[in-house]
Amino acid sequence: MKLAQLFGGRLPERTRPRLEDRYRDIIARLCPGKSFIDVGCLWAIHGEYAFYAAENGSPRVVGFDVNEATPEFHARNTALGNRVGFIRGDLNASSFPGQVGTFDIVFCVSVLHHMPNPVAALLQLRRVCGEAAIIGVPTIPERDLPHSAIYL
Image (cartoon, rainbow, N blue to C red; front, side, top):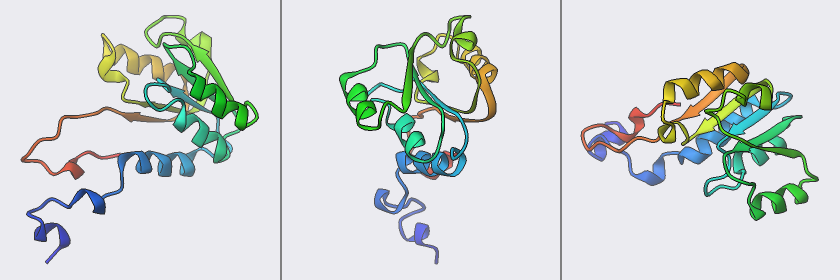
């Protein structure tokens, strides 16, 4: 009998990797030697994934957000020797691609559901993506679907 069957097809939360840990694993695998931009980097995490990319070998890292960089972002960046750039702007603006340039890795998590036109936002991300995009969109858990139905 499989472990999931013991729990009615659903594993307890503690046995699954946290989503944040899965993102970190992907960043650690893809980013060494690659440029990285985190689009929508601030809300409640203050650039955490951008700093993680810098700490894991990304030579050029930028955080991008519609809001000003937070004091927490500045403090962490100072502690890391200002290795992470920051650009304030709007993903929806036609100037976005020229404002940020091109990056090997584009990271955009929990942003698209805030966009007036998510498809247009995806096209904007594609314009600045050189090699790979890591896109995360939150979903509402469904009782009839195991949480593991969300793939990265």
